[in-house]
Amino acid sequence: MSADASVLSELETRLHELEATAQRTGQDLSAATAPLRQQVETLRRQQAGPSRWERVGLARLQGRPTALDYVERLCSEFTELHGDRAYGDDAALIGGPARWQGRPVMLLLQQKGRDTKDKIRRRFGSSNPEGYRKAVRLMDLADKCGLPVVALIDTQGAYPGISAEERGQGWAIAESIQRMVRLSVPAVCAVIGEGGSGGALAIGVGNRVLIQENAWYSVISPEGAASIIWKDAGKAPEAAEALRLTGEDLRGLGIVEEVVPEPPGGAHLDPEAAAAALGEAVSRHLDSLSHLSAEELQRQRAERFRTLGAYAET
Image (cartoon, rainbow, N blue to C red; front, top):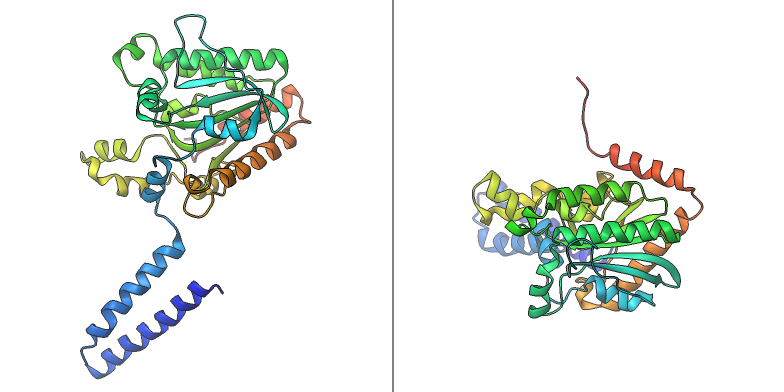
């Protein structure tokens, strides 16, 4: 038993004894039990770790490592390729060939930006249609060159602007999902911050899907869900609990294969350690997929996503 667990056990025992004495004798011992109960509740919360809503906050925290921060620590020879060959370039979804811990791969990265100017340019990681069409182009190149795909996901969702809808946002996302299912090379995806809706799923159809300890992945953001259900975005913490969007939730549901641990307090406090853990996990899963044929990879990927969720035939 850890020191904190031992202290909690002693406090709980003491609290139980005082409450039993008060009930038996009729004495008012609230002056003694109230601060003790508060200590017990505080220790329980600490041992349970951050709440779902607190993890959402950690995923959004200024200073949390971005996709490019991990690339700088884990990759060499990264060559960013630009444009979708149809409309233009998208700064929110970037990628290109690189060596992931020495292994040749094709990277797909959702990049939020590091400072205010960069975040505005990249729309905080929310892609336009040309970003997803660029992703399809890079997947085509990955298949042609036999490069495994590594996707780092970090977005609240696809860009919701009118111009994005006019250029076929939904269609572009659907094409990206369809193309990723048909990859003949291994694909490992990792949610490193936020994984929101179709904007994340567009590059999230991997043979393996990982998530960092303080990241979240959901069909909708907590604020969005709260606005729809309660007409009140302030109820986002309750929505986060209902959405079950954390790594442990998702592993229990079979949506992710692994929760990648972060340094105590979050990845922003020790980016080097966070990168080492992420690099090891991605490399290990790439190793496990390397012996599968193209047909086996496609079949495993399709079956993986078809079996998600609970349903009944009527």
